[in-house]
Length: 335
Image (tube, rainbow, N blue to C red; front, side):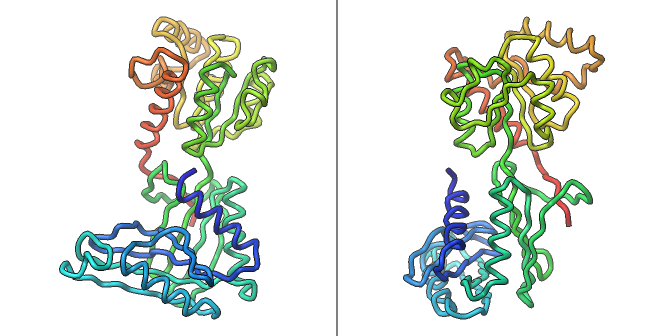
């Protein structure tokens, strides 16, 4: 589990309890800053902290200021300006500036706690959601994002959170987990599920052979034992979906590939040798797919690392998926 996921889970737990705390968020940086915009730190009344916004004296000052406003409903903006000569003492590699927003959260301040809880609930329910705050009035909004009225912003596709400041408003965006749809409950898939779990993917196994697709073999995945033409209708194949086929059975794999090629999946891959893949492409051409469309299929699947064993093949597949993810420069958002 990533540090972001750990912190968000802890934040969600605190919101469900009776304990007051302060949420500190980096909203702007300039020059050298050890933590990016959006980094968060939680401080409770005992001075216990979770997360990080910087380090050194900056972090210590943030904690002190947070404890001062813990029992109030007043947000506070902190600015730390550091010369090159003083940088080391405050945890910076060299001179820079950090702006930090402090938000006291308590049961009494229901407006704020409810909006923050809604924000996290939507995220943990698998929705793309935006938490925004006006830095002059400290009014807050929670926006569940749909698929209309898109604007594009830069993002790291492997980072499930993006934060940025626009004029006097700060936006924190939480993305749903990327989906990995594995067609074929084979031995390779068991290793691949474990790797995908590390990278926080939502994992779905599709295989009509119910003897293979069992919860005992795949406890971390959602299992669909219908044929791919039915099972994939239950799954939204979108820009956040990767689909791979592993069965070597054209009756299963080809149906799934046909569905994937008609979708916005960012990654499509299929297991098999070059000869097997060539035959696969010939079959799909007969269904009307062009060479440009078929070039979307990674085959043979996985980065060439000389993989032989099921675990090595799974590693090569996951590495290729990550490589493709790293090439994604933007993700669509509604404003």
